[in-house]
Image 1 (tube, rainbow, N blue to C red):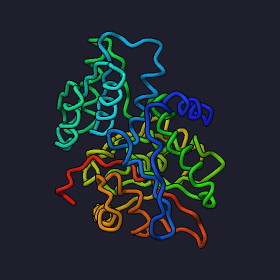
Image 2: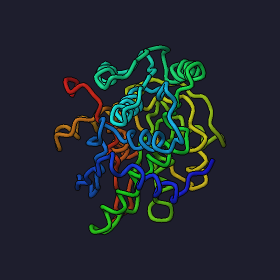
Image 3: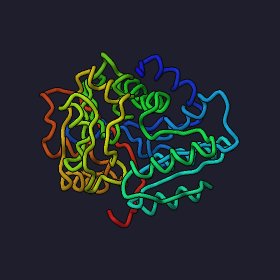
Image 4: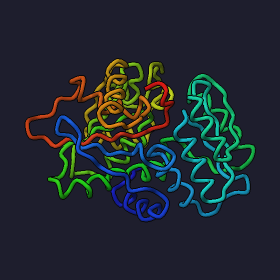
Length: 305
């Protein structure tokens, strides 16, 4: 299923009353930082969650159900709480405790099962079939992808007065954010997809012509731990010729620490992955190129900073 800019624009209108228009600030290296870490529930994921729920013709009595490495679950729980809907969330055992605590604080019923996202998703799909709850996929549903793409629309609008943006760096897990942003900014900016070297989900898919299973490990596994790219996001980025780069765990850790030292922005490792591509040289801008980096998530234990 194709997600278009028009789908993203409709999503933006639908969710506008429920999300924050997150700030953009000037960073080092001549970059813009789009601070989705300041979004409700700590990540961009609430955009897709709200759009999926608000797009439904009706909501079943069983409410909504989702599987997540953490951020998507927190986002679904937050959206459900705000809309008065029951939420049931399945997370893998590697899910950060701060995310599990956040889920429970929002009133969601939480089940930890499996070692990776794919195993948690299998359990959630079985439960959804039993209860009839509305399934909200972490990255491979059209409504979710369109909702995530609203980050890109906002960024283009915010960057316009400062000279616009040429390139947007986006961290990738299953591909919902990068697919949505690519659809949103088609023809207006170039997209660079950034993944950890130890989770090259989209990178491998682009190299081999379609989503394939990859091993998941490393510092970004709890949030970027999709072992297979979503078909919707893959089709969008493949058609657009999106560039894919990989960054090492050390570079991600250093970028996260820099965000804290230089800006007092607390992010999870996934939130710093796109910036790591600039710091490590995995992506080198041309002279005068205007680059924006999406800082996508903040659900972390501050003690680890």
